[in-house]
Image 1 (cartoon, rainbow, N blue to C red):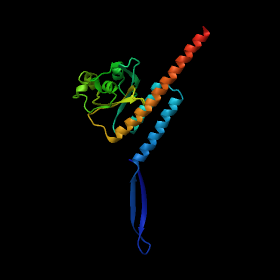
Image 2 (cartoon, rainbow, N blue to C red):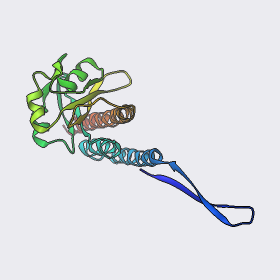
Image 3 (cartoon, one colour):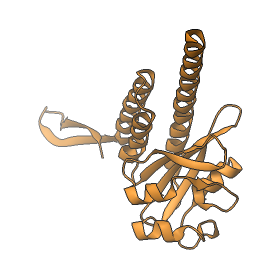
Image 4 (cartoon, helix red, strand yellow):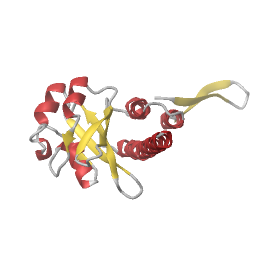
Length: 217
């Protein structure tokens, strides 16, 4: 917690100090918001500087992990070109074995949090992986790694095309708070810009390569 404090002497009619007045103002959220803005700008700098997509998305996830009040583990999955499978995007703190296990998972109406969110293009908040029916076929993958809750939000273009998902995992069952949802909005909107830009750049590079090959032949 961060506090701004003011200490002021209290004087009587004769000018003698009789007490001290103390006033405190909680500026914790102001500090967090400043950290959030700095980290967000760093992510945009990485994207503009053409850093690897996983590096940029990893920095975006760390914004959540360092500013959240809970021990959250973030993950971004990217929708494959076939529109049916989710591929690893970034997950700097998730157990590596778990990230590898879900890489290539098929989306569907009852496919855990991320697979369902990508399929429906709607957020899916699972507060208890062990008991939620969406995880019936997948909980044996998550529970051994100590993952008990997973909230997944689709990453969408302005035209509501699904680019991937952003997930927040927790090691205990819990519901999202208002602050959690604010962080989700920030991450998904920024991730959409970053992923869209990366794919546009890749398309331009592909066109340039094809044009070069054509002119060379």
